[in-house]
Amino acid sequence: MLAHTQPVSELTHFSNTSISLILQIGIFMVFVMVGTYAFAKFKQNKFPLKAKNKPSQLSILETYALGNRQYLLVVAYNQQKFLLNVHPHGTQYLCTLNNTYDKKQHVHE
Image 1 (spheres, rainbow, N blue to C red):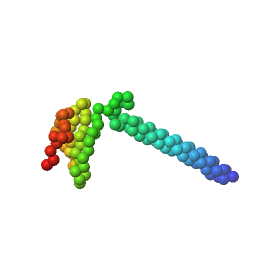
Image 2 (cartoon, rainbow, N blue to C red):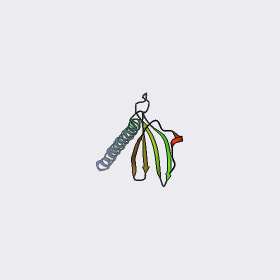
Image 3 (cartoon, rainbow, N blue to C red):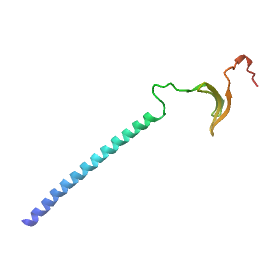
């Protein structure tokens, strides 16, 4: 009779331990999911680094496709204009543009 009652108590002890372990793993997984979500939202709000009430000083004014994934860009930053060449291997600064550009004076090559 005594031998019969010991396995039943061990089975009950095992069940309580396994339920406790499953509960602990579940709580841990909830913390991991909440932490991952919070980190993703934090990172999303911090990139790009820009003040919400402050207007952006950087803007793309014009683009011109050259073909084969190459573009010319006129970019304005802080009251200055720059001509950039964008290609598959990177971006290249070409020159600073002045504000007195007139389309009538432009010569096509």
